[in-house]
Length: 310
Image 1 (tube, rainbow, N blue to C red):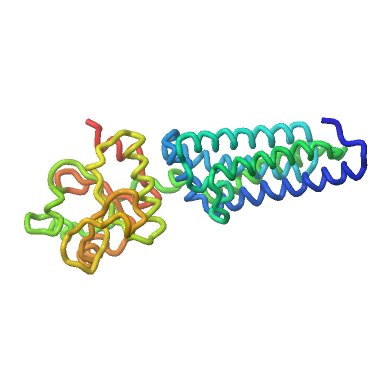
Image 2: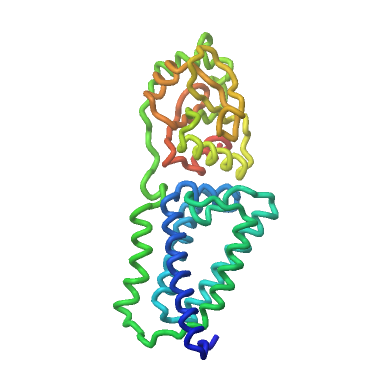
């Protein structure tokens, strides 16, 4: 698109261009602030594996920052304009898919700062695309920076994003969390509080979670979608939460934020087994813990191989 001939229109298009650049950068920063929710949101579509969802979330943030910087710099207009419109079209198609499969939860377009459902977000994207087309009428600046200026300007935001929030699978490998084996064996014994769950037979993924804990809630979302994506036996997953009551009992779903059902066990037993850690997951085979993990190092491949591997 050739620049507007009218100076007022060119100036208006330039101002819109600057505002759009600020918007894209602000959107990226808000996603980075709520990166845990954003990466899980991507994972819940059951399209990408967990580790690739970590990477995709950060690449989306990097793309928004680069487009925002490109709009603010007002150089390489054709490349920046095309990239911005294509990015918004891709976002809109993704949101259309979300509506098609019945998703009505927040699309995380503005991170945790602004909750907006897919339908409203599509309308927002259409308005942004219209604004981008109008902003194409701004006159490009004649300055063409040398490679030793533009290359660091491109690399720096990407490096910054991955340094501020590296994917969990880059930082947290397999580990053996500390837990009280004696207390777990006692609770799992024939006269123990967990005996009725039959954890001493077969393979189970036992999650110790606490209602109201945001990381416990996100652990629940990870586990739920790992189970769905890989068509795992849902009965192999057991949630345990603490209670002042001394008897094992199901926790009604309307009293918690968990997607899956949970059982409550007495607070003392819960605390003794986990040493107060939350969330913590035990991969148990015939009553024995073979691996443990926390929210950050949940490994989809490890869980799948544990439950269905030979």
